[in-house]
Length: 109
Length: 113
Image (cartoon, rainbow over all chains, first blue to last red; front, side, top):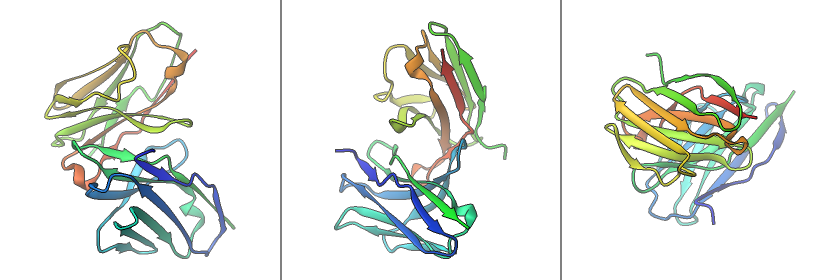
């Protein structure tokens, strides 16, 4: 089983919609979690860290569910510019971050 | 802050040739990571350094791959000899504190023909 798993999508939603996707992880000892955004032919960029209490940044909300071992990302009032691939990541043992394969999101006008 | 700088941006080489990818981390960051990204396998960690010392190279696919970090401001990833299946985007990333996430460079798109 992969350490981090994501639905590859694509998620195709209309502008203004709310969209959410999850990411499951297998290592219950994982301590830190992240969401990265990657645009086509660009590098991944940190979108937000995921804290135990959940956190919100504008239209973006990240949640952590330790009992079920998943993290989620919710995007409200989606914009065309939100179209990208969203990678979840976790800080595993030995000081390294493991990435999921990413979920493709496409926002249509 | 110039960010993580990688060179070259694109590399096309023939099978069997040596390829050297370069990375300059963000000044002050003490950890450096080399990743490879392909459609099939996603983003894979190849090797990482902490304070210029290789910590974990378990992701390096074969002996054809080697990485060095001679000082805090420079690292190389070398493939010798290169093969078509090495074609991928190679990212370098650096961090001051891993728990705060990484900053990635723009990547090197390698094509081996």
